[in-house]
Image (cartoon, rainbow, N blue to C red; front, side, top):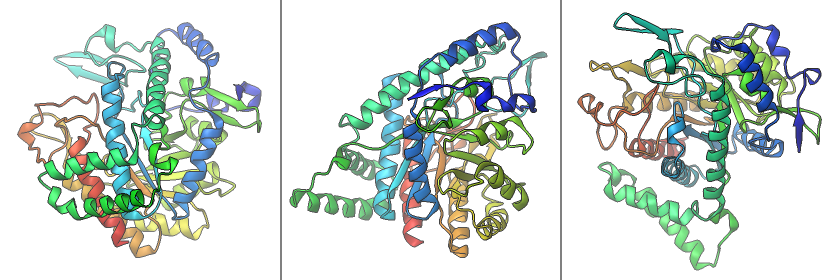
Length: 449
C-alpha cells in the first residue's frame, strides 16, 4: 500500500535546483491541474515489487546474476497494441532464455517499457526549410509531426503517458503469468530462429544443449512453476520530473518514498549533474536507480554519485550503465571500475552498447552498426575479465519487429535498406533478428568469462 507523497516527506526537494531537459510548458496552470490529477491516480507498480527488483539487482552486483534490460528508444502512444508489446516481450524472453542457459546464472529481465515516452534532446528547437519549432521530446510532451500544433508541449500528454503505461503493464503482467512465457515455448521460438537465421548454424550447438536439458527435466517429471511464468520488471528514464514527482508515494510499510511510475528508473548522461534536480530527485526515492555514464565520466564523479545515491552501500540500489562507444570502452572503463571497486561500493555494471555508436548515414538516417554494438559489449567483457570484476548485464534499444534501423547482423541490413522500415521516432533499434544474434554472441562471451 502506498499513499501520496507531500513536500514534508521530501518528495519535492528537487524543485529548488536547476532541472535540465524539461519541456517549456506554455500553460503552467494547465500543468498544475494535470499534476494534481496525476497525484490522485493509483500506483502503476508497487513498492514491494521495487524491493524485489532491488534484491535481484543485488545479486547482479555481487556477480550472482545477469541483467538483460531492453526495449524501445522511445515508446509511442500509437504502439500500445497487443502485437507490438507481445513481440517486444517475446524477443526479450528469447534473449533471456539463451543467456540463462549459457551463463548458468539467473537473468533479471527488465523492459524499457511502460513509461519510456520521454527523450532528452541535444537542441531545444529544430529548423526545417526556414521554419523553427520546438524539438520532439517524446509522446509524453509533444507530437512528432513538424507542425506548430503538434510540437507545442501539452501537459495533457502526461496523463496519456500514465494510461498508456497502465495498459502496457496490464498486458505484460498477463503475458508473463498466463502461460505465454512458458520456458518450453520460448525455447521453441529460439529453435525456429536458429533454423531460419543465416547465422543460425553458429548457435545450433547451444540450442541443442538447451533442448537436451529440457528433455531431461521433462523425462524426470520436473515441471516447476518457474518454467510457466517469468519475473519481468519495467523501467524508464526519469526525465520529466513533474510526472515522476506526481507519481511518488510514501510506502505505508516503511514510510519511505517510492516512484511508482516504474520498478526501476535511470538518470541519463545529459541530466546527471551532481548539483541538479534529477540526482536530487532519485536520491530521495527507494527504487533501484540506474545512472548512464559516458566516456567523459571521471572516477571522482562516479564516486560522488555513489555517495549521493547509495550512501548505505546496498548492492542492488545503484546500477552504472556505461555508454562509452566501441572505440573508447577499453580505454575509459577500466579506471572507473578500478576506483569504484577500490572504494568498497558494490554497484551493478551494465553495458549500453547503443548510445555511443550512433552515426548518420548518407541518406540522413541515424543508424548504428551491429558490429560496433557487438564490439562495445566485447570490450566491456574484456575489461571486467582483466580486472576480475563482474560484467553485470546489457542495456539495449530493441524492438520485436522486423525494422531496418541498424546495419549489419545475421540477416544483414545494408545502408541502402534503412528506408524500408525505419520506424523509430528517435534512435535506431536492433530488430528481432539482430537482438537474438546479440544474445547468442553475449552468451558465448559470458561462458568465456
